[in-house]
Image (cartoon, rainbow, N blue to C red; front, side):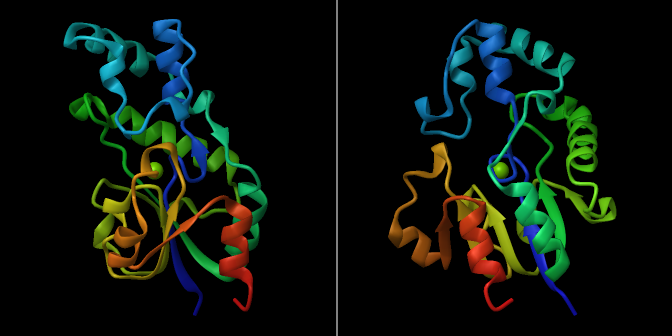
Length: 190
Ligand SMILES: [Mg+2]
């Protein structure tokens, strides 16, 4: 039986385009590395302005502006031959919790367009990622790496730089920087 591999989408497979839309809305040029927290909505302004942005955001599809991580297509293709792959991505978004339905569709359509070799019946859309048992899990947020998983990989990102060695050890998590490193870990002696 193939080993079960759970993979997050945003900031693991791709940059989701959220910041691009923030920049379009604010006419700014922020970069991911300008931030240390995952949620960056406070730069938009007071609640009223945020609400204006959320409406703008929901009229667009962040995945039209998404940027794939280097080498991800090639490595995922190889991994799909050795592992049973489940994409596990949160869809209910901070600030627009009750209007997040559209994000399920945007994510689904992006995944089937970019990764036709993945089985869409194995896409998991949930914010409760710790429910699942797996052999390997890759995510960019440490709080998503607390389930019953043998090998947990934290994908290096702007907002997880403060996760130190002690925390990684405590949760038995290994930090990875890029898909070539993941390939090496998961496909050497696989
Ligand atoms: Mg993520």
